[in-house]
Image (cartoon, rainbow, N blue to C red; front, side):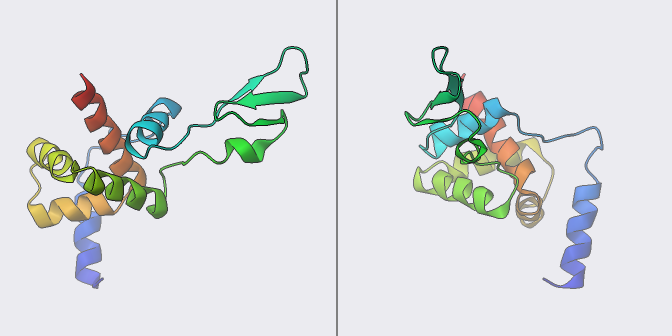
Amino acid sequence: MTPEDKRLIAEYINAEPESMTYKLDDDRRKLITEKLLGEKWHFLMSDPVCPEWSDCSCGARVLSTDAYHHSLNRTFDNNTDMMAVRKALRDKGKWWKFYLSVENANTYAPQKLMAYLDTEPERFCWLVSEWMKEVEK
């Protein structure tokens, strides 16, 4: 990436209103995880009879203090998760529908739009979750 590319990307990102936030909550993460990626969303339900153990939504029985099991959920704030989402959109034939909906909602030129989508994983995944919520209506 050339210094000019970096400058242009920074310019486009900074042109965005500061009030715009793209924080993914668990509902959005769960939506992408289950509906788009087809993976299990992990959350623990404590056992009232045996409180030191919990049942996970995936069917596993784990110690209630087992933070690792819950950490199996994707965070969607990194390039690996972003690329998994992009690949799932592509593989399911939904990439262009998503892309066109973002393009129609923005005034970016196509090459600028790709830079906009590719520079911030959490923003990209938030946009996908927003699009998915609209499609489900």
